[in-house]
Figure 1 (spheres, rainbow, N blue to C red):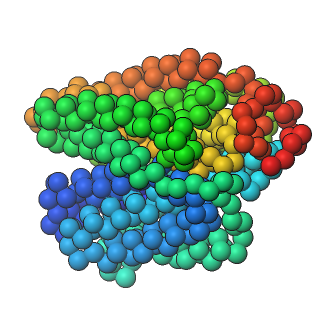
Figure 2 (cartoon, rainbow, N blue to C red):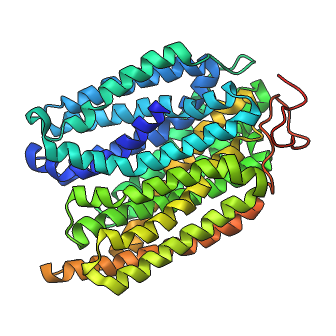
Figure 3 (cartoon, helix red, strand yellow):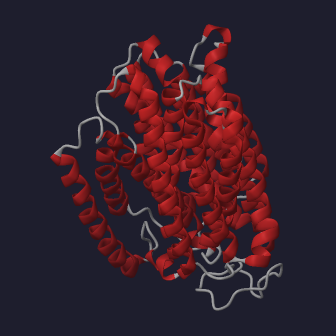
Length: 480
């Protein structure tokens, strides 16, 4: 959980400090973009491979290697002498996160008995909520405090004590686990996954900056061809030696396939919301980074509380209905936010934003923890790393798609050349449009959730496909 929090904070903490880095280091706009995009691309491209490496070489071993590498990369970011070094260190940091993050869910899956995992996933959901909002707040505080005259650098250096603590505690308390049968790393699969994701995510990341060039559309179309080739190759690889990078049999498990679809679309909504929310508060309303960060605290608390309750109290009783209620509650929060933004205009205060943010946070909390639990509930132990890598990968892909769509649902509604007096109103109007779009997608997610099991089965303890759900609170009849 410490490592998961460190990664989640690191994804968001950088955005607040970007203007300071640009001003003090003389970074170009392209370099500034790559400080964030380099991390995201390396992270998304390596997640499935990182998960499989844990299955093969041991999840504890790969996890500790990822934590150590992430900590070293954080030190390099904090000590970067120029923007080029910072971009390179961020790419390394993303690659190390891809080793570290998939092991978190896989270790939980392999360590805890079925009836205890719900509590752990509730904690994981709370960590997700806390990390999502505390990153910008922590970034704002560290940047404004200018500790020891280090300016923006503490946003990276703060990872050092956290990483060292995770290494010490991880070595002592985590139990080693790996796939029961010998597996080999599928290098062709690694190459195809990496190529396909880069062909999809690179044009999305740079599209708005480059005015959506033709090669970008060709690249994204070509990514679909690469993914098709990947599926065909993985099918042959699985039949030949049983050691594919992506275990396609997972998609025959209904809960996994449906959950992956929901996770992807939900990632798109989060990718859109968090970016346009930050732009609305800081550029539209002219708030300081600290004021914007503090505004998000009620949202973070609501997510954490609802995530803990959803898995421990609500899902065992109401099953899939909890996730569907979360989708509708989050849509209601988005619509309430639209109404308040229009009603109060540019004079809106953080206190007036509290109610819609709490409603949205409750909705998100009802989804994040139970969804992860539902996706992994019927996955065999030997494929836990691969499945966890896929979950994180589609979430990152969804976020990247959402960031790409921001240029359509947010910037696309504004004129390219705004007078200073027009900026606030234009940003507020674009924000309301983007939130309306996000609320519509939450309704689509509600409908997609009908494909999830009515009551998620207890986690499968053996290697075969599940035949029936184990009653809640009971141990499965068979053990590995």
